[in-house]
Amino acid sequence: MSTRIPFVDYLVLDPQPHLVAAECTGCAARYFGRRNACARCSGTGFRSVDVASSGEVRAFTIVTFAAPGVPVPFVAAVVDCDGTSVRTNLTDVDASPEHVHLGMKVELTTTVVGTDDDGVEAVNYAFRPAGEH
Amino acid sequence: MAEDLWILGIHMTKFGKHPSADLVDLASEAALGALADGGVTMTQIGVLAAGNLLGGGGIGQLLQKQIGQTGIPVYNVANACATGATALRTVCLAIKAGEADLGLAVGVEKLSGAGLLGARPRKENTGTWTRSGRDGAVGTVDGRIGTETMAGVFAQVGMEYGHKYGGTSFELFARISEKNHAHSTLNPLAAYQKKMSLEQIMNDVMIAYPNTRPMCSANTDGAAAAVVISGSALARLSREQRRRAVKISASVLTSDPWSESCQILPDVNTLTRNAATQAYEAAGIGPDALDLVELHDCFATAELVHYDNLMLCEPGGAVDFFESGAPWRDGSMPVNVSGGLQSKGHPIAATGIANVWEVATHLRGEAGPRQIEGARVGLAHVIGLGSACGVHILERAVTG
Image 1 (cartoon, rainbow over the protein chains, first blue to last red):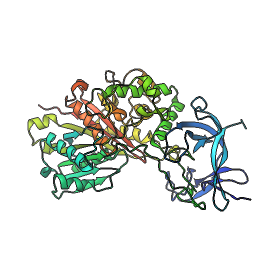
Image 2 (image 1 turned 90 degrees about the horizontal axis):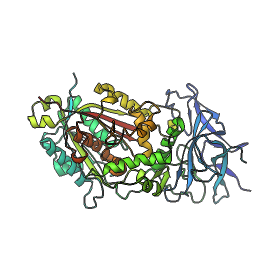
Image 3 (image 1 turned 180 degrees about the horizontal axis):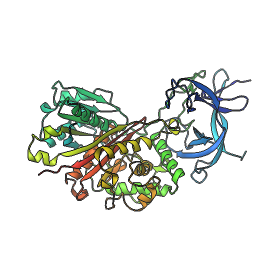
Image 4 (image 1 turned 90 degrees about the vertical axis):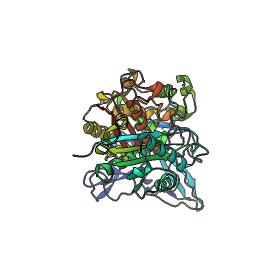
């Protein structure tokens, strides 16, 4: 049986896939990825917080030209998850302007990126239209 | 009291493909052109700031070897798409500090054929997954967690504005591009001087919705340079030099302050609004006083948000501002009468000075068929992701 690892550090797979942010203990600003100090208040204390797994699309684009090796077209978006902005792809939706809209309700889902030589699956996150699955 | 700053001479090369000219050739053409325009020589220049982003470094000293090694301080600057404006600002700072009274700023880039900017392909893992970077990603993030291409980032910037205020559409963004391509037909230095219909623009190749190819800045080669002089030094020059000098009423550079969303999608709005606020205050004027604006339309979606950021309209009023016809060259607030980056071209490090050149040329009454009649005050804006925003406000000289 293969094991699974998250594609990025800020994705937690178990028991339910969700994103975690580093939240400044001084001003509550949230960040994905490693930080040395808070960009807002310069505080150096952080705690790990769970980010809401549903939200609404605040901005999107449909990318049809990308770097070699990046499959196109795909929908890139910024999703507002209860006040925390998340950069993501949208999945389970046609990559056309008729099927994606601003303000669309979406929820977190996971996709398998690939399997390495040891049989380890890398699992990434994406958002899909909410309530349709 | 701090010194007044003036542009004594300024020049830009034609933007486009220059296969037989290297970076130094283009920088030399612009620099020698600006010196000649100002009626001075390299031997009189006290400080040089040279901007280039993708060429490998040290452009200032390379330029000196071609046009004059006089031992003056040289600053090589790189600040994303605001590199040229940063070079100009660096010279302004040196003159304000009293370290020189005559300086030269140059920006140059070779970019034709560069393709899509911002995408950073990474060699995919072979063997076993290995974490890297500050996010601990085990593979290429671009395309898997949103997009890193400039076209995609700025598409989202425009869409976000539409989400916040409403009124935007694919067609609206395309009409902004239609305006700039129409303007370009009057600019012999633009890379593309081709009027395009709305249908042509909308039906062209989609790069990142809603930006089709003609709605994206053109990757071109080019250079621009400016000679800056202190007010007291200008007073010692000829009447003709003083007549053609253009006052730098404001020279401002900002970067992104913290905002929640800028951690995810670059916030091109706040730093631009901050730069504009500082510039209007320094110049002692409001946006109503402007006769023309050259702003950073790296994509059609970006031009819309900057109408708002530069306060050419009320907050949230960019769509109405465009619909009113104001930013057309015969409108109340002409924007990008050069054709903008979408048609003039965007040789990154040259752009900041080229935008200043466009405004200065109108203020001098030397813009030929595309002259905005009676132009007295203008604003030049550039933005670089990462982030940097340069705003310069220029005023026509009034000589007795």
